Image (cartoon, rainbow, N blue to C red; front, side):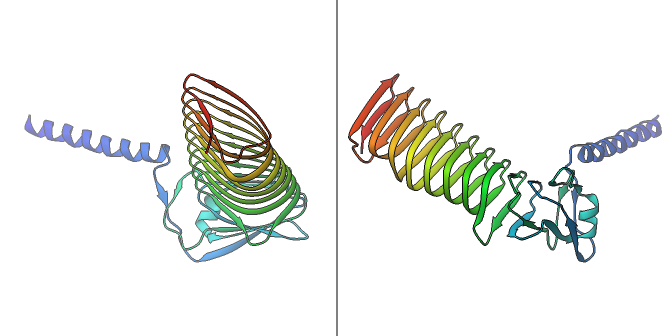
Length: 282
């Protein structure tokens, strides 16, 4: 009887161990280390318009006359990566978690056709030189990071899930949407700016602009105290806060314990407050 109980116990332990290993693989908890020497893989792309990168790659943007991508890492990491180059897009992802590697970098040689950058899962992108394009859409999530100097007619940037963006911008039209603890810092020379922050995110702006439309909610923050703006239309709610520097006019609405502070008194001021919201000069 004792022997039977021992065998039963061994069977339960073996099954439990197998189950844990299986769950680890299914949930993506198993880490894959780089094996062998670092190699370089070059991919030619006819007309690169979209970039979509995840899984902690270090990415460098390089201005070029032709589009191509150079991946530098271990052979097994390249083999296990899902790489898509269809429809003028470069996309790379990795189903498992990546462990120890000697190098994991991507050089993206882009032309004037680049329109979209999407980073997630701690991917990190930067450029040594100014990125000059007609239009650019940027989407950051899951602790990804971006550092760029950008000159464009129209720029849209969306950040979420603790991602961060550090930007120098010259643009006629700029749209910023930050949420879920993400952070955007930007030095701006622009005309029209729309900035929205929610869910504990923060946006810090400095420079100059013609018009700013700012909106904050849910404990978020916009600090534009060093952004000189001719006309500002601001709305704050749910414990959020804003600091602004209006030159000519300010239209401010604050509600639900939020606050708007302005560091310069413009010629025209319109203020609306409710439910414990405050609007005052500082």
